[in-house]
Length: 346
Image 1 (tube, rainbow, N blue to C red):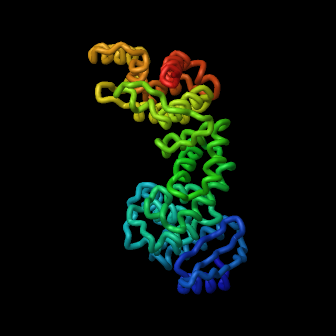
Image 2: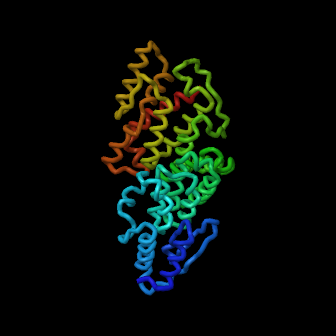
Image 3: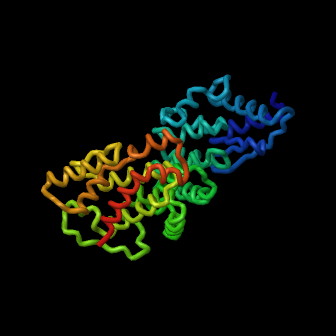
């Protein structure tokens, strides 16, 4: 099926390159040599381009891995499970299949030895952003020069990301260390005032180091039960969460915000519950058991028990989206917002 000329050139590429990627749209195969030089083959298919690419990948797999059946099916199952062994990571980067690159990027055995090859193989593929996110979950990647390259790409790609969870995850990852400039972080924070998915990334990643752009100050609350909310950063966290909840129109933004809030205000005597009235009762009971009578402490106890449990079943049962989430969950969101207001008032 492959032309003799393409077969010969592909064999040369396999023998001289340490990594190979295939551009399925431009019908180009690119190899990277050990001294970081690229070698490009422009394919000349005599048949349908898609089928020709499959033939190219079959040749690469058979020569590199010794498998005649194409991309090994077990790798498709394991690509995102981190179960690819270390002894074939480099070989997988020579078969020109992006799923193999995902498998290597997500492997628990990934190390600096192949990191730059993985990112090179990901370039110009449909999974480049996904692979970049996988890589930035590794501490050694974050402090590696390739980490900033990945962050730069993800930052540029962010405006084209429609999936809310991916927006949150990408923002969260970009805020690590000094992957992006302070100016870029400031822009993301500003954009988050309108597109709150960005803010969820901030409250997940930057607890204790959130921007203070509106002159928020600490409150003198004189209670150990309120130490977690009385500081300047505590107040910024609660105000940011209140802003997010006020504009809720997407389920994953709500779920993850509630999780952050509950963890931030967690208390050993408070348990997460799935009903808001049960949380209110629990907060009052714990308050009385401690011999206290303070609306701020009661508010803190209420919020300490919130989690996605409060919203998942309702949203799922009614397939809620957009402003319908706020309307249907008004009985849940209102007490939470009231508690936030109490805790951020002098």
